[in-house]
Length: 294
Image 1 (cartoon, rainbow, N blue to C red):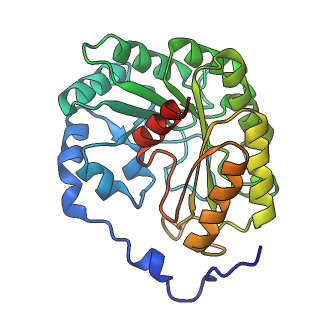
Image 2 (cartoon, rainbow, N blue to C red):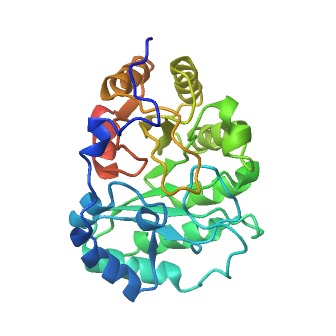
């Protein structure tokens, strides 16, 4: 496939430049999060969709603190030595879900390689408490790779989320430079384990483009995801959050991302692709499409 995307150093392409974050729409959700001492990955990772999602009353909860024990080249979340986990965080999260009337809840976390369980218990407690409320929402978890500890994946699966998401993020060749503490094989094994242990649980993953990968590498990665029985894949353009993260290697056009979607759909994957697509963007809609197709 020939590429027509724009190289860095040029002015931003129209399909990127026309997207704006409206700060005025952020405050209500942010205020509720601060009241409970809660955090969102939307803010910490400087997601370009945060004003839209906050304006719709949705957000992706970030648990186990805001400091990650890893330092991935593309990620704006702070890294270093984290503080102890707040034991009251799951209860506060559930209280926020009830107050906001959320029908679909997405929970993710920083990597906590400093903890014996990698932070898995935080996911388990949130899921268990959410299952106990009167109007139970659907629950989607977006977990770390737990350094290949599949027993920790099992603990979360056994708690019963509706969707288990683990992002592959990029192609194998770029892992050593962008995800130095991660392993491509670990990521695939997480998704494969969920399919093996809970075949009715929806499996999901996400990719970024624009980090230096080729179309053929993305296509090969989609084949790997299909092989481990992933069901939903999101694909979106990487945007440099701050000058501290790696620069954009190339801007993929919307047409190229549409072709990525076609490649995935030919493999039987439910694809959500576009310049501003992120793993949790309109997650409840992807869930409904998979359920409708089942």
